[in-house]
Length: 194
Image: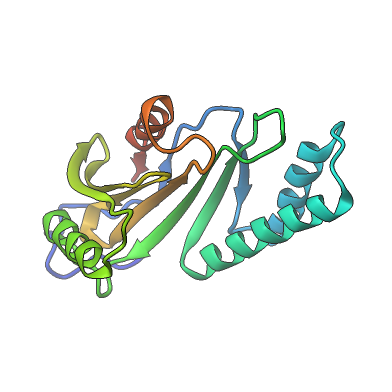
């Protein structure tokens, strides 16, 4: 998560070395920056299938889907992958992908970024539009996108180097009520290590 500070940011603002995030212990963490992340993912899938009458084909399909998700996310800057599987059926009620996204073509100002995302939502014409807003977290300004089953929180990194993006997905329960509050609390726990 290190990188050069942007020229348009005052030098008094430091660039964080890392971040801290509080996630409930029931969520299985996979560090996507390590070479052995696939082994961690396999451990998760095997634990979920253990003691359940799950066919090898289903286990293999779950492994393949999660692996493909992780590989695609890694190619876009994902750092960590958290998985929650507490449903009796072994279904995946929630997941969280944490990514470091440099500003690049993305507006560095959260208000402009929110407006840019809102415009993309309108132009996309998706029937399941997401609600875009700018919020203030203890880690700084953030852009929040709330959908029916997803919540994305883009937290502006100190020093203007980019965004720490938290992408929550809750396909079984949807992103409302307790799940939405839990995800907001996790996003609110982000702290920078300077």
